[in-house]
Image (cartoon, rainbow, N blue to C red):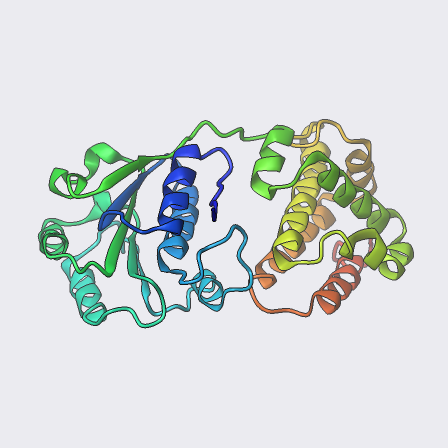
Length: 307
């Protein structure tokens, strides 16, 4: 069975696994949660499951269609967001025009409408007509943080999926959820980060055996860089507030905090974020890591001082 497993979201995981193996679902889904960023992330995964002709797999990095969805470059997925807090009728008209023909590449055509509670009345009426005469090949994914504000006639046409919002916001449990890494993997990444901070020559010359052999795919690298990002954030937390949010007074992170200025830590956080974003595109992994190691070693506080 092609399982779709989303950490701490068992209901959503079951629904997506069922759809991934044999689509017999409804024409509209409504994702309800407390965090807009999470809703958009889950809606994108949902769209991949509905569209991918090869059966979506977790952390899919090989499927051309899934990669194009990630980059926002797939024509059979339309994403509608409120403009100035409103979704207008014109957006629904554009959507209907765009989906006049059946899908060519994917299993289905999908549109995601974020914050569906922000439909104005004319847009809602137009959308209802679209939903009342559904094309079996066109599927809607709506998101909202306020179910009570969504028009009842739209709610009645959707399968409602309430997300589990009881996610930890700090500590190692949070690190494991956002990175999809276990304790051993997280510790290996931290060990490499400490080598990088204390012995850059060793990090550069031995990065393959110290790091790349373990985290060789783009998805693993993204997770590894997220661990580094949280470590630098905790170094900044410790520098400013004398406490950590994620790694519970890890000695190596304390050492980074005490040896570097706030300015350098902020620049390193921004640098790691930029490199996480670069991993969304096709990159030569070895060259990417090499450039990263060189780049982070060149960060100064603006006065020429490094860590």
